[in-house]
Length: 194
Image 1 (cartoon, rainbow, N blue to C red):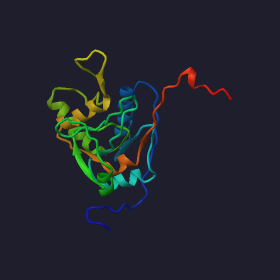
Image 2 (tube, rainbow, N blue to C red):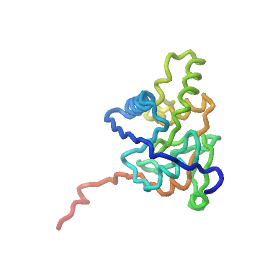
Image 3 (cartoon, rainbow, N blue to C red):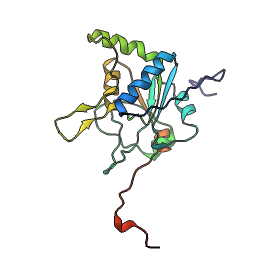
Image 4 (cartoon, rainbow, N blue to C red):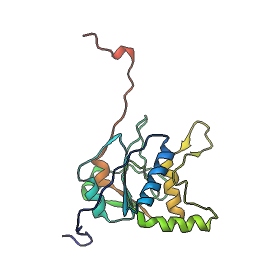
């Protein structure tokens, strides 16, 4: 086995939970449930993505506290959701995916993310240092100077990690193997006459 890869012993208990509601609230509820359960990891999978069956094993082998994918937004124009450390969006390339590139980034979307729960005490320390009584909210929309737009709940989460000094990594291989299911606009002209 390659150096740096871990061998996993007993099959871990995997608990699946689905919540319905407003996205920031749902993500906060799921994170709280993971904390309360004593989970070692949290795997975030958005239902509007198709990801490879090896995604979890790949993210475990990457062996980082927080690792996820880049994906295009559903709405046009399709833009990347991950950002370089300088704030610029990451396009990524198929060549980087084939190389298995893992890159430290400023932020990722939460379509496919594996997170070690051992980061929670670090986040709690940061919250306490800021005078907050709780780590929550960890996910929240943020207002921008454009009244028609807001920052995403996943960007808010990534900012909280950054404040606590927790690194975020992007897996280009899993990014290129994952598809974000988009809705195409359909008009009456598209109705079949057959």
